[in-house]
Structures are given as C-alpha cells and as structure tokens.
Picture 1 (cartoon, protein in one colour):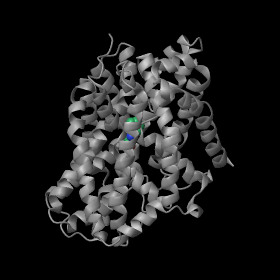
Picture 2 (cartoon, helix red, strand yellow):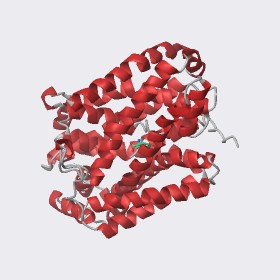
Picture 3 (cartoon, protein in one colour):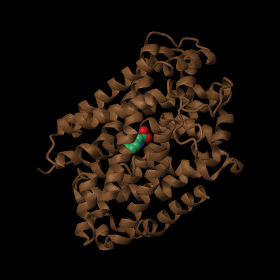
Length: 448
Ligand code: PHE
C-alpha cells in the first residue's frame, strides 16, 4: 500500500514544525544554555543549526522522499538503488533506536506539564515565591506514583494519534497550535521585559564569553541542534516519505529550522529575565522552566489563565513531537506486516516500560550512576545517560553517516533530482566536507 501524501507543502511544514518544536525548544534549550554559560553556547548552537542541521535536514527529507518507506526501509532501498550494500539501513536502525530511547524519557518530562496545568487552573501559582515554586517541583519529582501516572497518560495520547495514522489530526492541530504558542511566548517575553532584568538576559544569551565554552559544551550544542530539529531519529525521513515530488525541500527545511530557532530564542528571552530577577540559578538543570515560569505567572495579571494556556500548549507541542518519534518504529513495523494499531501500541508500551527507569532516576534511583567509573559520566543517572547517549553520541554519529552517504555514496545526479537545482551544489559541498569534518572534530576534542 502506498502511504497517503501530505495534502500540501503547508501540511508538511506544519507536521515537520510540530515535530521540531517541542520540549527541546522550551524546556531543554533554556536549561542547557544556563548550564553551558550562555552566549558562546548559543552562538555555537546557531552555527550548528545553520551549517550542519539544515543540510542534514535537507538530506533526510530528500532520502525519505526518494525511498518512500520507513527510515530503515528507506535507507536500505536507496542504498541498493545506488548499487551499494543494504547495510546502510544501519543508519535507519540507529535512528529508530534513538527515537525510541528519546520517546521513553520525553514522555516522562512531557507528563510534568499535566500536573502543572491542574495547578495553574486551580490558582496554585498566584503570588508564589521562588522557593515555594522550587518546593512544588521538588515534590513532583519525589513522587514516583505521580510521575508514572502522567507518563502513562502522555504515552497513551501519543499511541492514540500514532495508531490512527499521523496525517489525520496533526495538520489541523499544529495549524492553530504554533501561532498560539508563539503569541503566548511573546506575552511572556513582554512580561519578562518588565522585570528590570531583560538587559542582563540579553547579555547572558547573546554576548559570547568564550572562556565558558568547553569541548563538551560544543558537543552539547551540536547534539541539541539535531535534537531540536528532530534529525538523526528518523522523524524527518519518515515524514519526508509522505512529501509530494514538486515541493521544494530546501525552502521547506529553511522554514522549519527558522521557526524552530525562533521558538527557542523566545523561550530563552522569556525565562532568563525571570531567573535573574528572582535570584534563581541559570544552571539549575532540567527543572529550570518548571521552577521559574510559575513565579512569573504568579505575578502577572491574568496569570492563572496564561499559565494554564501555556502548559496546555507545551503539552500539545510535546505531543506533536512524540508522535513523530514513534513514527520511525511504527512505519517500520507496518512495512513488516504488523498493523498500525498493533505497532503503535507495542512500540508505545515498550517505550513506556523503559520510561519507568527515567521516572525512578528522578527519585528512588537518583544516586544510581551506572557509568560512574568514567569521569564523564560521574553522577549521571539513567535518565541523564539516555539523554547524553541519544543527543550527544547517537545523533551526531547518525548525522555523520548520513552526510557520508549523501555526500560520497549517492550519485550527485540522484540527489540533484530531488533537491532544487540552485541549492544543490552548495548543499553537496557542505554534506561532503563541512558536516563530516565538523562532527569529527567535535568528537575528537571530546575524546582527548
Ligand atoms: N525536536 C523535538 C523537540 O525539540 C524532539 C524530537 C527529537 C522529536 C527527535 C522527534 C525526534 O522537542
């Protein structure tokens, strides 16, 4: 059965933006920026998006459309069509595995938005002080039962859409979701400007202080460029398989990347003024937005309403991303004859089970650091390790192999048939030289 195609270029952009914009922009970007010292990190992240992320996005969408199958099927088929080994399907396998692992913990974090919706709607943030907000968040993390409940609900939501076929509701949902999220972030930035610490936040985010930049923060910035654009996880390849021939892949990829970056920067501009105004720690970690934003909402007129809306939108943004994570595996199983419903339920259940180890990492197992014998992984819980391995190792490696495949293995005439003529030479030079060398250099300095 040939899969139905996106109804228009706009529909694809919406689905791809829905995949790209999620917790990565609003939850992860601010907290890793805080941990990695601000401006210089942001600059490296932007460079990684521009010179590595966008070309890889173009490559993945192009491969997906050419192969027209699941990421694993696509990589095998395209390689064979080039007269090469089906072993290149390994890129698809690693991508599918990365997406699966990400989904397992992403669902736990996305689950946090739901108790926050309840709290916001019941007026719990009104006038809340920073310490109390911290205590509220700490209380949530300390409760395996609550975390498990919300993780289960979120995974259920993901499976529901995935089982029904992603093209149905996705397009319509994202069409109103993205503008609404944008407006709400603008309102938050507007509030942040009144805190008196906006200038400090601007300096923190945009004045690069290269002394705070380590080899590891460069790797984190690179990994985040892939994570935030949903690359090296099969998501863009799977969605590319449903893309019509006449749509321009280059223009579409630029649009998606620009929207994604804008959301992340807006989130940063909203959060850091509040962090500085309340003496909170930029490097506080994964709880950063869950601790800071309630304080801001608590002081804003109409804050209860805006807070509820914000966490609802964040939940939806995470949902349209998690659906795309499951798509690599579901489309693959589907190809192997498993029904869509069974594949979505089975895949979701497996990711849910692995997710329980993330739930426990946040409380009962918070001292369990399985790889503590290596300096780099000292103090890293299972959750930290899933995050680290997927974003900082599997994704850069997957992107490196993809660049080698499209740059060196695939015949240029074949990629030129998919990519718009005017962009092809530049894209080809970048994936041939810049991307592989860039990733290798960053890996090298992290090993030594
Ligand atoms: N891009 C998503 C985000 O930033 C995460 C994601 C990663 C989605 C991999 C799909 C695949 O939240």
